[in-house]
Length: 392
Ligand code: SAH
Image 1 (cartoon, protein in one colour):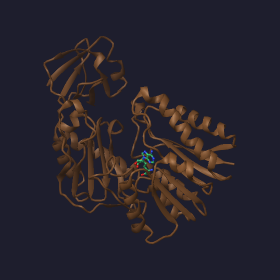
Image 2 (cartoon, rainbow, N blue to C red):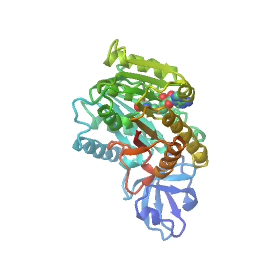
Image 3 (cartoon, helix red, strand yellow):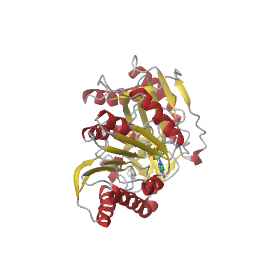
Image 4 (cartoon, helix red, strand yellow):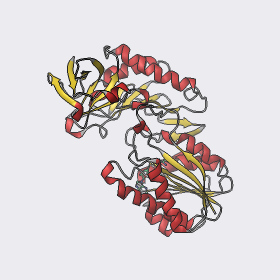
């Protein structure tokens, strides 16, 4: 195994189990590892401190272990078992009404760069690092053993998530099975999950608990689900007794799937209508009939330098909702940008509320669900923020 030596003092964050080593912390390489190879990391005093996947870029090494151990079949199997056991013990992987959950959440499961979502009999695996791509076959093999009898297919979907410069040329495709049955259930609701062409792994698994909360507030309300993707929140609102539900997304494909999902869950239900339209255009032209609005936009900032524009985006978007929501209305508003902190987001929403001059109370502060855990040593893993607001 290649060895990497750190500059003096640069082992401090590793002693606190932070899983990233930045390129600036490295003094020298013993040899020339390929991108995605496992390397051993030593302090300037030549003491072993961690091992992990090497990659060219600002995060040079993603730690797999703080012990000296082989990264092999047994390693992957053990890690996946730990992830699965956790989801079983908290009831997520054993709920008879739900077969949609995240099995592996990168750093949150001590597997930096790896995401695995479960949709009924299919696991969708996504690599966000060169190393997880290089090790994909070993991981798939371990996954199929750990989930024996539970999943039949493993779909690999990393064409858009790997570092472009690494020349890895990942191809999306099945590593096991190949079923086209893509209906998964979330708390009893059915969804077509398009892992072949859809966004992310095919579905936004991270909003499950927030959707369930929305259901409790939907009775007799007129609901706008803005940035609906395949309709997630809309069906919880319908089940909760909403009198009208409008789903809006700029993607025509997403709206097609939303309509298909209506047919799966509430065939022919006249309460639902879907529109393929830009959010800002729709918010400008809509009336003031809604008393429950969901705003779940895509990440406005992917990098720190885009932060200011992103905050302005959140401000403008929320201002439109405050301007039009009915008195006594409830707003579910979210940000999934990792670089936008909880405080940043709250300030943007606060400013939007102040512009409207309305009285606004915070009912809930939401985050990502337990199957998207945050590693306490890696606070960067917290990304989803939501506020539920009562607007007088
Ligand atoms: N709420 C969804 C997830 C939303 S993801 C769920 O629960 O599943 C963000 C969505 O915003 C994507 O579906 C994307 O197509 C859509 N989107 C991006 N830009 C948009 C815009 N300008 N107007 C409307 N929708 C947009």
